[in-house]
Length: 575
Image 1: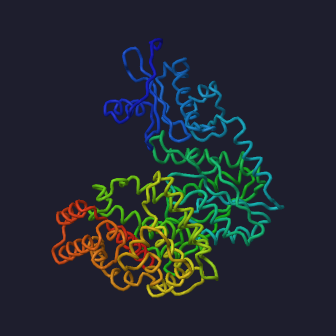
Image 2 (image 1 turned 120 degrees about the horizontal axis):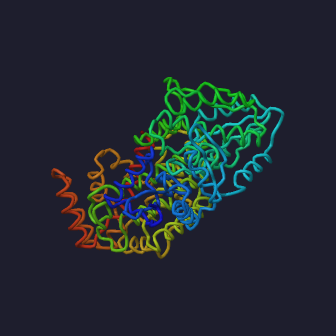
């Protein structure tokens, strides 16, 4: 029956292929919780799908093979094909989270088992990957009583610090293992580990280890193949704890693991429960520390921080986050403000979700890549500005130059956000300086601080903006910054509708972009049109008409777009 088979790539965007794939997974008791990067199918002589395997990052998932085809050369070729694709994509160590009945098949293909749980096994292709990581853990400082915390810190909060401080006081050596990179996290692994390193630098018995795929990762906690939520959860937890007790804890010489109590998240609460049942049998104490809560009785948590940020309440988020996370929150909020400006649709002459406006060299996707590229540099500016001394050009300009380089690399030479790097960078730096010193955070203090920082920058020479400013007698970008963006704080923050706010800014701002593209006539035209629109009942039809008129005249109010993004950031910060 399986002597005449064919292996094909599964194009899951085709409805009929997807239906057959999902049907095969269902018949094998599997589910799909993540869209694969790549999938292969095994077809029999009757063109029936009898096997499939998929690749999600460096994890082979969704392996379903007809019982009569298991162990055949065709089945092995199917799995080998997915493995080879993973290697081709640069993954030097591939993981397979699968049912025990498939273990022998994978074992014959040079995968070896590293952990097991209820109805599940974890295998990897790297022969020495786990042992190498354990050897690294063994090299870390230790004492007579060694403890460990595994935490995501997405981002690090005051609650996390409370747990760390209490744990450190109970052991001679405490190792913190941050979760490895995960696409579902809001903050990158480098950002999360960096905040942990900064926050624990003054704790002599605390070591922040490198993360790995062996502690609560996509490899040890996939959720795709057991239909029952309770069964799946326990299987994943059992697998992760199996790895911990047999490999991680022995490498660290750990005899106690610390966790915070979990009053809200069911999965984490179940993890803590099974941990308390499992680890003591292996000589490892589980110590639960009561969660730190605010005056409102609500526990400090990373999910609370992320929720406040999603609601635009950056100020509230900062009150929950650890001080070491402050630059991360500011940098991410700055990038989110740029994304909010970009997403606002329709806009006159500017790139939005519907069209490119007056721009022939950029579009929504390009500008989105640009924002992603410069986001880390806002974090760096915030971190550099946090301190006693007022940040100056000598500190911030080198970071800005690197941000511009990253932007040009992402856009293949197109200037998408050069102005925003300067203006938003100043605002982020001012906020970081005020927050780090415990100073008042207000519209007035931000305005004054931005102006003070900007006055350390030299006037620009021979740029489009400076040449336009000289020709038309308007302020340069540095001039605007030296005023602390006074019109922004004085006139533009009060309008809550972002479309109206943008048009208000266009009607009042001496925008060098408009002067450069249209001269005085173009600026007069733009102001006349937006002023008339502001006096009317603004709707999408009118906004699209404005967009068409601006585009026809090659007018793009880029300076106004930057001011709108700044205003969104300030709204978030002062909320």
